[in-house]
Image (cartoon, rainbow, N blue to C red; front, side, top):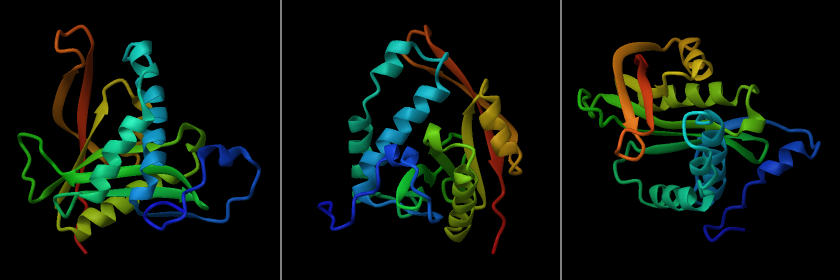
Length: 200
């Protein structure tokens, strides 16, 4: 049991143990799941940023450091509409999504939400977990009163862009470049996609 009195989630390695998965689900994350979220984020980043970031930068990503930040966010989320959702296969946490009011310069944080992160463990992709997370995100932001939701994706990530566009998202014309070191030696171009979650 964790310090929060919640059973610890199964480890990602359990996915390959041959044990049948009883069910899939999406729900709000618990502080006790911060370690699993940090592991998934690092694994997903090492896949999605391969070839974009230097190999040594990717190798040095520390799941424990990410986990500490997620734990703090889950214990004290601040804004009531800051939410972290997790996808599970049985008891195994296989993906997560973080939602927040958008802080983009052209956004209205009262009405515009941002998917700050949506990631699925590489070994658990193509099993519908990403789609379930995305559907739950849209339902959640609709319930929270947002009128629009956006997400930034790397301009070269055709797979991720297709994932969103096949779900009805579209580019809204905004783009940006991330400068990793502040000296323009490593730059990552991103485009913004958006959708209207509709109303109940």
